[in-house]
Image (cartoon, rainbow, N blue to C red; front, top):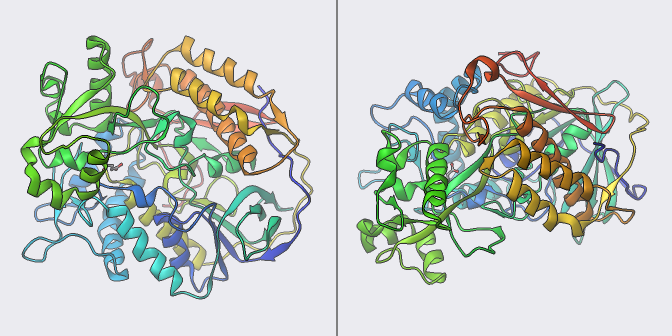
Length: 548
Ligand code: SIN
């Protein structure tokens, strides 16, 4: 199957320069930009406004061993168990040991986390954690508060150049095989409009995930897999792409619900809410020793199984025992959202169903965030640093963005790659029509969702190959995003077909068991002459060439 590679775009209308371009403005991107100050000139490019990414939607919080009795070792253990045998242990060690300091750095920057009456950080629990270690802000508005503090810090740093409403299209290869720059399409007013070029020495991708691959997701509309698609077109390795995490408790808005859906944080279960079926059975008690607070993949699978057994289109979250005072204090936004949809969680059950939430895989990096393309770095959801394995532990995502953006900045502070001349780019060009997006999302939802099989995945691949014929010569944001969604979806189908076992967030109906002998390894994807190539790596390890 040929995938779009070198895509159609008008000739660039302008050229700018920076030393480092950071793509994305969530916790990973803005934290990278702030830490990179002094290393050279830094430009942040974001496809919408500075606060439009996934970070501001994070409810539950940020996990770190900051509470009494907790240790990085315990956090490490919980992360490895959730990751179902595919975490890179060295990366997890860095995450949990550097995590507490990174959170303290956020506090020093002005992030206001919730506190107890005695002034300590108020910590809660989520699925898979054996300790209360989730710091939160504004009750259930953690991401929004972190985003606010980071944006304020960036606004106070006049040396960081911010370009908003700018979709990064492709990497410009350098003559020596690394990065010479990026092309981008700017739609925002008051800036260089249209397609242009930024020549630079390094690119840090922090552009978030791919939730819009599916019809319903907790991700915002900007999550169209742009960073992963750009990276694989540039020759980078994508890793662990089959492990798409479905959040167990997303507000069920009816069978036709599409696009971004309201999340009901795991922290609600952390405060005592429980899942029940139509008959009121507390079914998680028979599924796992941690019951409703089992790792996320376990809960999502149990809900899907129960829905299939009972023929229900959703199950229920019973949070009535929390009472009005706790609901209002801890979960003011979730409470308001439920009420806006006619459900009062203080007195009624909340209808919930799993929906696409997080890509545990992405652009494979070493322990300093370097991808397989020299000068191209990645952190946050776009990246696969190895900390999440087959299933991310709750509230480890903001932490990963924070810790690995700091590691990338430290590496670039030690020396930037040399500037390169742009190389002639002979990759073929093809863009897909924006109008196929809905069909693509339906195919992926039907065939590559929570429960997968060989026949279903093959049918999904055939449908995507059919859609790939709908090309356009009219470049624009919709066409680029749809092409990116297609590139990532097609690769995802190939790796999901290849992994013939059930592990973490990858659930195969036809291979229902975990098979450690055959599959304790990553699956890597590259594009070779437009075709996806899937490789099984030898083991579970950081990207080759990594420096510990
Ligand atoms: C949640 O609040 O349940 C989501 C947290 C996460 O995705 O880690």
